[in-house]
Length: 340
Ligand code: NAD
Ligand code: TYD
Image (cartoon, rainbow, N blue to C red; front, side, top):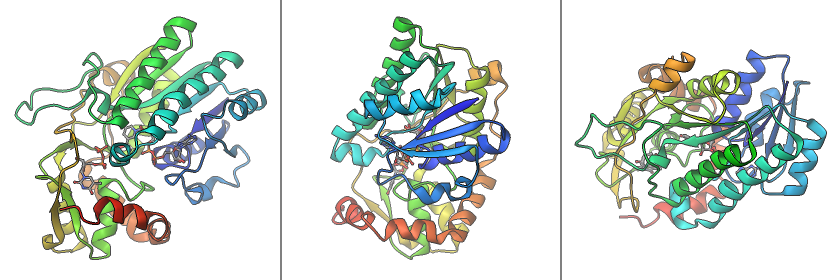
């Protein structure tokens, strides 16, 4: 079995590669990644010497390179994690999101059509459903909730999902899609809420909370997401969408206060800043389908997962300090410099 994992030098793709190499030592895993600002070669250090692992630096939009790799590797399965993923960056500059997230997805699926594939799996997001109001805690996203996006990021991911389903219907490509809620855990780039707050708190820097801090996200430990994708690619039905989430809704402000508490930092570091444009209020997944069909349930409770995550950032300072010492500084100044 050969699996091409795109975007494997990023947060979830990297964790997925670790999960797969450990659970299926006989599988060959080929990681295809462009190594954008969000891709970190060092994330894959621990698997580089594994004879069943190969890393290839390619852009998923580069048709010639992608086709050559498919010709050489003849993958059985492709799992596409590669994407531009940060909502704030998509608001600043949408174009690269459209290119990678939409055209890149089409290029990969064209290669799958050309060379044949047992499964193409698209890693999508609950953000394609838009948001839910805070005063309706009874509402959840199901797989039949209409697509209704808010940001250029979520719109690009939704466009990709539509293409994936169209390739299934039009060309019979054996596809599946997972739409997951917010992930947290080791190796997450410190531009996202949880690692950014951990890194800033450890450096006694202000903790920038957007708007009121009352926006709600449904947090899932990254390993649980990886296990869900593992189940879907092996046992999930072709042509289907599976929502993945663990009924773990928290407001942003509660998360930031919890991080302060765990790290012994004062809440006075919290600084309310101007809200994100078009900021989604609440995400909440109904995971009934994946539970009933595939028996998936999240295994890591948030109280444990957040402790493990904080410990990881404490013990792996080199990994994130290297990131925040480079281009990130320019990004941070641009994004947060005079944000009042
Ligand atoms: P990430 O930003 O940490 O990593 C993205 C990876 O994709 C990086 O290694 C980057 O180098 C690579 N990449 C970007 N453009 C590329 C291109 N053109 N060609 C090849 N590689 C390219 O992202 P993540 O948080 O690990 O998210 C992975 C996937 O999961 C994305 O598709 C995202 O939409 C989805 N998702 C993420 C979350 C979350 O909470 N992080 C939740 C649900 C779904
Ligand atoms: P983020 O990690 O960017 O994920 P997403 O927008 O894809 O859900 O943000 C999670 C939540 O945290 C979101 O409501 C925006 C908020 N947020 C802040 O309040 N401050 C920050 O500095 C960041 C990065 C996010």
